[in-house]
Length: 296
Image (tube, rainbow, N blue to C red; front, side, top):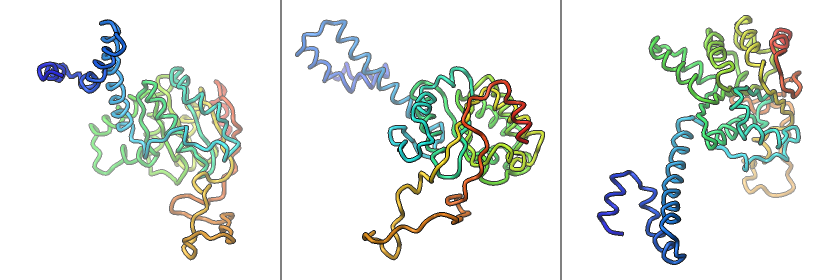
């Protein structure tokens, strides 16, 4: 490639085209491509590179704990998770409809994995996504050094994405005024943007977790109006592979892994007895407000 041509491509910021041009020139010569075919190929190369970079930037700005892919999820582990339903969510139609999703189930059954995987797929489909745990949300709005200007900036950050994922609702009771912050986010996004939440506690416990019954009622009234509720039951997905015993690091046969029944690990919620979820898997329509009030 002539240096002058390479310099021109750099000035035009066509780095994707520049990287593939040598290969495309050889391909055009060997396959006797006409000018239009050759031009289409090299422009598509540039578009592909730009799309890949855009996805990478959006994945980074989404603040996922780690990028998850639905192809990596073991749907056979918990039969209560319907593969078709999850893939339909990953297709993003609920985002286009500005609807919401709630994933309910005990700790470890795959709620966070699925939420992040759906979010990652939404980014590939061209949507803006933000992932925050409920504890991140509390820190973003209730930090000791938060000024009104910073709080307004944080609110705009939560209102902008096409899909907002709020994870870990119910891990512990929230700080005072958290309900007010969550309510404003849900109210402002209601029927304007999509929100996905995960929780390991049934809906009737949310008032206690938030510490504000009116706020919890208003949150559920709006959030459930157009929400798909997916209730996941079963064993911990994170513990599907038995841990290697410290006294037997080689994992020799003949030793059965210790049962997790009844164990409690307060550090990360693993091993907690599953809550008695009372919400069946369903799509909640306009009666969601009445259901929310009854749950509280």
